[in-house]
Length: 300
Ligand SMILES: [Zn+2]
Image (cartoon, rainbow, N blue to C red):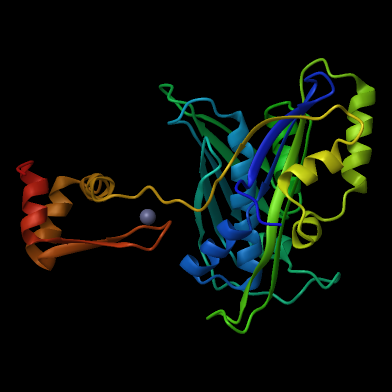
């Protein structure tokens, strides 16, 4: 079913648990188109983007952001995803062309592509220093790793699910596209009774894979209602989020200056210009000799 929203938050059990669910199908498809990811890299990056959207529920101010950084020893290398408060995300991975055979269950081997390593979550809440925490990867399957991070680093009992289903598509340049992607996260509030934790754990365990649900037309609202059946679920917010880059010429200028004025001067003299590419959207920014001169002298 087509809806005018794709992300929803709510509470249940008298506010003792919070939930967020997102349909990230269009977002992950956009990531595939930008980065030309293989199916397994689409799944790994897509799940990370989806989890970043889910973690946006902890942000309060419009300028807050949350970053998920995965550093594994698998062929995909690092994965980075950033979300704003509304679940709008951007991201990239070190090797979007990394490829692996399907795993023993016949599924995309995201865990194998990511490998062993660490997950770092950085929250920029507009304070002097961003908040950050790091935990070891449990499986490299992303959602499990985020669940473990939340329990171990932030002491928040949570259940996180994130999935990406890629299928053949003869109309797509890559020959495949994202059929369904999405996720949900339930978190217990401090003081939540043990029975509630048991009930929610059982409910999560009984859920069909999120891509099966979304592929069959379930909305984020359907997912929350299904998951929290009998727990007095109440919707709080709903919105529309997507893949959104925030790069600009000004940001690129700041990046150029950060290499050092001496080095930049060298680049100006030797290369007569510079080119920078945004990691998140692959947009190219060109600076000629004149532009670099203005940057170096501060003259506009
Ligand atoms: Zn960009």
